[in-house]
Length: 336
Image (cartoon, rainbow, N blue to C red):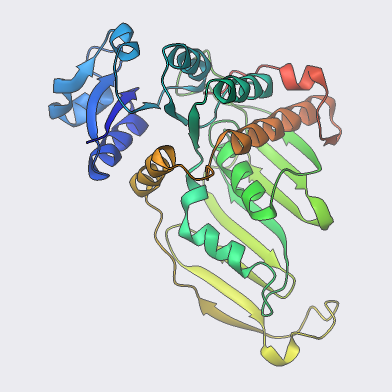
């Protein structure tokens, strides 16, 4: 049986502890320096594998190591694991607190033959794969725009999920990004050392495609997401609820796009309800696979580059094009 060491016993750590066991692996150790972390409080049996001495993590011969800490700890933990000879590592998003750190981790992993997977869960989402298959279909045409409308701010901790989703749907990084941050950001619930402002982001991709992330700190609801194609739109209000498709009738598909008032047919799509534990199990499968990573360091570096770009754009109040300059790549942001 393959064995997994879990580093971090918070809420996401507890989800991964469930995923590890449901996927048929043995959870050999749960490291957390706290006397009684959330995972142990929630599931008392995990006390049997709870460990507070990190040296025992480094000396473990487990097959895979899963890091579920805040982002400030990702880089030093990964570095220590690689120095200790570990070859399969899973890291929660965001990968790091700077694009430079992400790039250097990729170089370190490559040099040492380490397979590292970053938990951008929507890379494993059947509904996102469905949208990718719709892109370019005779019925809908090309995907032109994605508009994500969520409240709660947190462009670093939460927004990196949406950035990665847009990159995935658009086939890679944007050409440029423009962002404005919220005027006021509340204290971060994970601690005063973190600062994770929300705001609005516009990303422009090849071929005129674009994505908008509306994630202001002054909004406290989820409004939904629109996936806009040439001849139709898919949207949801609750991601786990109804996904609605509206598109031109078959007889109107070839008519010019400027005839935007043509009637649309509406239907509900059959979706797979989002499940964080299922995504975590898929992440583990990716870590143990020998195929090209689905959510590896290349994708995570792209996401961190976009995040660095949006912060530079907001600071300078101007669009930023990629690749970034050295100062923007090196800029450090205390996101959790």
